Every structure is written in C-alpha cells, then in structure tokens.
Image (cartoon, rainbow, N blue to C red; front, side, top):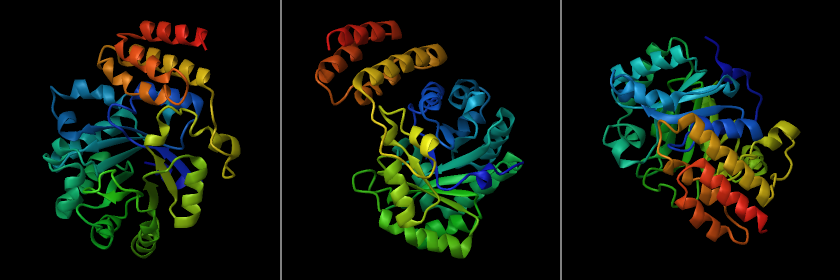
Length: 328
C-alpha cells in the first residue's frame, strides 16, 4: 500500500482531529473554501469499532467523501486486539492512513488507558502501534502525542516513538499537565528534529499548538525545522484558513480576511450541511459550538449569537441570520 506521506510537498499544512468539530459536514465546508494538504477524522474509539453493537453508531464519525483524499482516520484505545480490528476496518473503508491518539487529556479517555495515558505506558503504546500495523495491512500508521505527561519527556517518550520508524509523528508542544493553559513550547522543536535525524530520518514531524495562520505556520517551520504544521483552533470561524496555500504555494500571503456577510453565509451553509449529513445521527447543539467563532468581532454579534443559540434547526438559523443581515 502506498505511503502518501512521502509524496507530499514540504512544507505541508493539515487539519487537526477535533471531537464534535471535524465531522464530515465541517470537512466538506473546509474542502470547498480552502482544502488542507491532509484531512483527519474526529478521533474514534477502537474498542467501540471492534464491538458489533457499538460499531454502526460510530461509523458516522468515519464517514468521508471522495474529495477529501488524502484522509487519515484517527483512533484511540489501549487494547491491541481492538486496535487491530479497528485498523482492518479503516483499510476496508478506504482511508489513506491511520493515526493513533496518544495525547488527548480528557479524563474519560485516559481512564481507558488511551490518549495521554499512553505516555505513562510506553511498552503498551508500542504494542498498540504494532497491532495497528498488523491490522492495517500496509496502511501508514502515525501517532499524535504531546511532549510529556507531567514534565517534558522528549529524550524518553518522543525517542521511544521515533524508534518505531513512524512515517509521521505529530507533536503537540505542551505536556498533558499543561493542557492548553500555557503557550506551546515551539522552542523545543529543534531538539525533536535533532532526535528525529539521529533515530529515524525518514519520519516526518508535524508541529501543533498556537499556530494562528499560514504565514505564522511558514515562519515556525523555517525557524524550528519541522516538516509541517497542524491547525486546530485557528480553523474556527475561518474556513478559508488553508486557501492561501493553494493560491500562493510556499510563498504565502497574509491571512485571508473575510467580511462579516461572507462568514455568516458560510455559517448558514455549514448548518444546512450538518443537518443534511448528520441530522439523524447527532444533536443539533453540536453545530452551535461553531457559532461563537462565526459570529464574533462585529457590531451586534453578541445579540445575534444569543438568538442563534435558541434556534432548533437550519431553517431557523437561516431566518435569524437573514433578518440580521437586512439591518446592517
């Protein structure tokens, strides 16, 4: 099976997997207005995917469209046998890669021995990687993690992962303890790159944490030496985030700014798509977390948000938005 990672032009820019955010409807909006070099799915429980009764409900989180390639499925779990089964499923579904979450700080995930808890159990984490490879039948298996649990552990934890000769390693430049409460430690990236060059020169390193736009990403790549950048929070309310990379290649322009009307029209489009693609499977309230980002930074934004939070469907959102636009 082809390792698509080796064919990517550097530097490259990818969209982070975010629970209840980067669903299939959201990715279609991003795909239309500014496609990243690689998509990730939301993270999905390997234990659930391996369970006959739970699997059908979770498959919606692995739904994707042909125009989203290359796309990586992200899973989490600590039971190698279930990781193996989930990897087999990802092959059947046609994903280009498989990523294992070893960095999520959510306590419910950690209680399962998954996410950031993997940092505390390197031996089991290696078993999980091997199981994913066995089930994945050649699918490139990557990892997303943090620089440590309670403290920085680059020389131990990151080195352990690099010894597995992963095609890609995404590093969120904070510890589990730090959550997102402190600035990301980009100054540590050169150490990670130096370690990569010694242990596994072929492994691509993606940096993650506090990157605001493509220009900022390009500057961080030049300064700190990673191969690509993963965007998380910067995508909220800005589906055009990746559009500059398509227009300008490696010579990125300033952040593409959009006017209020454009943002609100895309918000309505996004809402309709969510209802169409996911309305039967997910609570409409999930869509509303996007409104804080779309509806921000202009006169009347707060009042509009209050009304949108009371809406119960896409038609109501469209009416509320159109009424607002008539009066600005």
